[in-house]
Length: 277
Image (cartoon, rainbow, N blue to C red):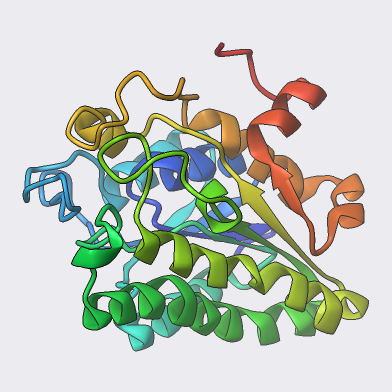
C-alpha cells in the first residue's frame, strides 16, 4: 500500500509513456507501469518501417528510473490485443499500491498498418487497429473507473493524435500518415468527452492530450524510412509528459474536462518545460 497518489501509465517502456512515468514520479506519484516489453534488449520494432529491429526500452528500466526519482513502481506486462492482460494489470496495480488516482492511456498499436495507404489496408488489419486503439482503451477505462469512482474521482488522460482530427498534408511516404492509424485514433479521441459527460459529476476529469510531433526512440530511428525526416521539428518526450503531469495534479485542469489540449502549447504557455525549439 502507498500513501502517495498512484498513476497507471500504459505503454510505459519507452517514448512518451516512459517520460510520463518520470514526470509523474517527480510530481510525487507511485506508478503502475504496463507495456509488452519487460526486460531491456527484448523489445522489437514491429511497425511498417521497423523491420523487426531491436528497440531500446523496457518496463524494468522505467521502473528503475522511477525508483531513482523517489517513487515506487510496479510493472505488469500487457498487450492491447489481449484485453484480459490489461484488466489484470489494472487490478494488480490497485492491489499492490492500494488506489488509483490517474490513468494515462498512452499505449498504441505499433504493428503493421499505421503507415499504409488506403489501397494497401486489409479489413482484417483495420480491425486489429480498432481493437487495439479503441476497444482495448475502453477495457482499461472500464477496469479503472470503478476504483476511481469509489475514491470520489480521478484523472484520465488520453494521449491522442493530430491525425485523429486532421487530414494528412500528403500521402504516406511523402509526409503523411495512414488511414488505419488515424481512424483508430479518431475513435479513441471520443472517449474523454463521453467520460466527462457521464462521470464528470462524480469527480472524473478526462482530457485528451495531442502530444504534437515528438521525437521518440522509434520515430528517430524510422523518420527517414517513413518520409518524415525534415518535415517536422520534434520535441523531446519530456515535453508532452510535463503536460500530463500538470493535468494529473493541477486544480485548474478540472476546467478542461472533456477537452483536447495541445501538449506542447500548454507546457510552453505555462512554463512547465524548457523551450526545445
